[in-house]
Length: 591
Image (tube, rainbow, N blue to C red; front, side, top):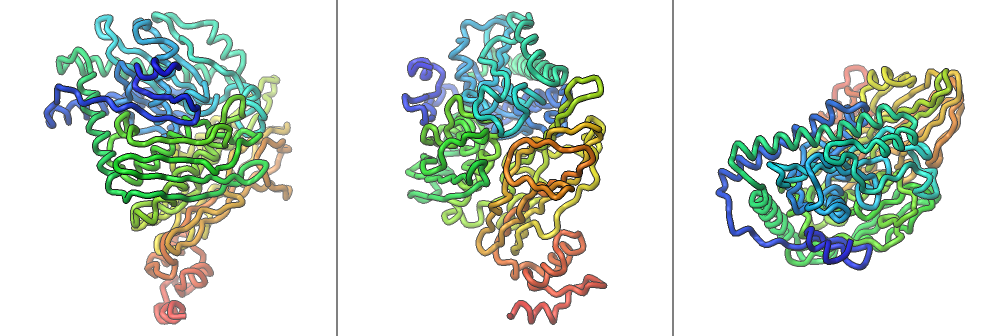
């Protein structure tokens, strides 16, 4: 995109490939009174929620239907994101807020026609890896462009190597689709659809989900046109300007409350060939923030690299969580924040770096930012959590020789909060839900032998970290299958805050005694049982300050062992009645 073109669309992509920020758009001269604005805003949110619901209900895969690995949003004709659905992941929605400007650079608004639909899975321009397709649909009212609806979701397969970190190049990771028309004036691009079907292991669910994305945008578009007709609107630019202006102003007001200065932190991940260091420096001046990831590890030779668009997405998400969670997430809330990372670092990977497992590293970014801001925001940020969803993909061959593949997501525990325990088996920061056991077993040959929370995996503290979960599975297949898991925190625990203890380690073990000591696909012999033990979140404040009755409840619920209650929490509990021995607890805590 040329600099002049970028200004036309409101985004500034500077000459340096590692810088990204947004222009300020002046307040509209026509203001909307607060009551009318509230009514219009709620209708707009209802519209994008209807769009997201349509996508989930028509999806062919549990990735979208059960886990909610998607995003949905509405944009004005300039490409400014106005509102997002309440469901979805920050890595999708925040990166989609910037990627639409690339769509408009490839297909300017005045060249689009009713019935056009655009698509791409370009990692650099959208959400960071080839498995995510973004679909953008222009919406017309009486032949006049009035808005765009867009959504992003993760497809079951994209060809190439299976979903994992083994590739040395993006070219090995699957089929790359540049920004192109999926539909032109209502007619499908059959040649593109044939290419997609021929290059993936599961064409029916992949094409089914892409058509679901198109249908969801149509649902959102129709709802918007009904909404505009009801309120007598011939455009939404004035509404967009007011929403964006207020969001930007609220975000800047929140930033002003943070003392001027420089805030730094460093966290570590297992990485692939070597541990990964993520270093963040946040410079706050007035009502704006500069977030610099210089000092982080260089690009990896394996597929754990993160593109800048994804780095920007989880950076802005974390800052809004810490500073202004109540502010709507849209173009305005992004403008006060600038995100940079050195090119060819692990947080600004450039082609052809492999990126399939980018979330493994990308989900650590909010924890790094919270740690940097914690001294200035006491009681406002959560301790470190499991930091990423674990994905498990099994791939094999059917009796007729056709390939089969199935992938699902599971989560460890979140970090404790300054006033509450962490949440067990819950994804943060992605928000992706785990898939029920019954659903996985009904759609694949995977069989669960057990699925339970891991005792003592939640970091001890006055407020305990969320517990991880353990899944023991086998595969009903007489032939060897391939397992490609994406995981982390087997070497670096989630840190506790203010005296809280770290969460438990993760691990993957096989019933033959083997362990997954590094990422990558591995063949699993028939009958072998695989145990996935997901990590827990860090605790908050010293564990000996936790209410003994809460420790007792945790013991009854199987989240804390009797030994840990005594040795770590300094609480004595009778093994038979499970009542607290307050006299002995008093002695233990005085010691």
